[in-house]
Amino acid sequence: MSTATAPTPTILIVDDDEGHAILIRENLRAAGLTNQIDHFQDGQAVLDFFARTPRGPETYLVLLDIRMPKVDGIEVLRRFKADADLRKLPIIMLTTTDDSREVDRCHQLGCNGYIQKPVDYERFAEAIRRIGLFVPLLLVPQISSR
Amino acid sequence: MATPDLPAGSELNDRTKLERELLATVKELKDVKAALDEHSIVAITNPAGRITYVNDKFCAISQYSRDELLGQDHRIINSRQHAKEFFRDLWAVIGSGRVWHGEIRNRAKDGTLYWVETTIYPFLDETGRPVQYVAIRTDITKRKADEEELQRVVAELAEKNKELEAIVYTVSHDLRSPLVNVQGFGRQLNRACDTMRAAVAAAEAGLVPADKLQAPLDTAIPQALRFINAGVNKMETLLAGLLRYSRLGRVALSIRPLNISGMIAEIIAATKFQLDEVGAEVRVDPLPTCLGDNVQTSQVFGNLLDNALKYRDPARPLRVHITGSVESGQAVYRVADNGLGIAAEHQAKVFDIFHRLNPDSTPGEGLGLTIAQRVLERQKGRIWVESRVGEGSTFFVSLPALDSRGKTT
Image (cartoon, rainbow over all chains, first blue to last red):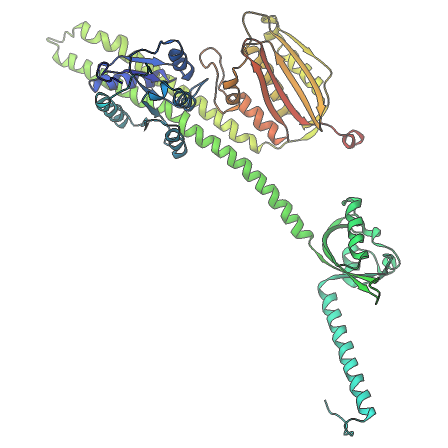
């Protein structure tokens, strides 16, 4: 698999809260990321996106909220990890709760990271900034199995 | 004890010794019996079960005099709280010469019930057949009441715990979300202020260039205020909902026979305007009577009709068909609509607290079905859903059916 051909993944923010999505995007930009950033309103929307997107050489990083209408983040994670191609997608849970049972559940399902959205804005900005710093270091696989 | 001087081994000496031993044994038996009477409720019956002896405690707890009891059998204190098999098994055990242990609920003369822990010991003849039964009992009415109270408290605690779990979940997920926005966009307001302050400070001769103020005034500030206000409103709604949900457990239920047909007719009459407005039709078949709380059950059906209206398919006029039947002691009601329907993967979630399928297109706080489920569980009922996208949803509500015993009272 070649990661060198597509070094900058598109960042998919999956969050039903429009305000959170704006704050995440702004802080990723503030951290210097120039990646394309797309926003999905709920789990169903991101599943639909992958259902209709041909599996090409594009690379993605998913920032996934848990509590969402229709299909929640846990279910999205479960479905991604059950799919032969999509299971390679790096998924970082980015959510408000720090409930240890939720953290355990996500890790058991195979998430690549679990980060709490801190309520305190300074800490929130710092958490997102660190994700921003981390992203360029990631070697993200293509999801296509070809 | 002084012993007369008698030659050892004489016949007289042997008899006296035997008598003394006998007397000592009788005295010991009397003492044991006195001790027993002091502690226990004692009755002796003949092999046919007729009472031949009762002690004072038996008379006291049963409130019958000794004369009223002697010659009777124990049916005089039968509370009819035990099945026939219970006493049949008891007789099978003691009739075969074995000891029976158990707890019996009896009825005193004034009708009050009391519990006794009982041991029945058969005295057998040399062929092994019972010649009389000695029943020794201890009053455990208080312990039984405590046990029942304990069970009630355990059930109540389990319910409270469930409620608490839901609240903790909501606080950790839903209440934090708007706070992130209030804090985050509060910071955006600060930044906008900084930008404007810098522009004002840099202005020459008090003339602030309009273009420096335009961006924060037109974009950043309104956006921040919009998210802060939305966040505060969201928290207000969530807190009000949480309080409503947590107070449900405190509402005292008044369980009585419910005429669901009449109840639904009232709900339809109350929502006639909304139904007519969208050209909806509600058909109601004859419905069974159940046991439940009138106010709370009415809220459940009201909520279901409200949901049918909210999630109707705009492509066709709403049709709701309400049917019911009795299945193994439960009255089951079906509220079937031809609305949008719920995808299989979303169905389990519709009862989750604050879960909403279409938060943008329908009003509501996401509490209706959560409350319906809780209200029904408290009344020994249940709610569940079957649905197909594009065809409609059927919500099932079950409540204890009014049984034959209920009908006669």
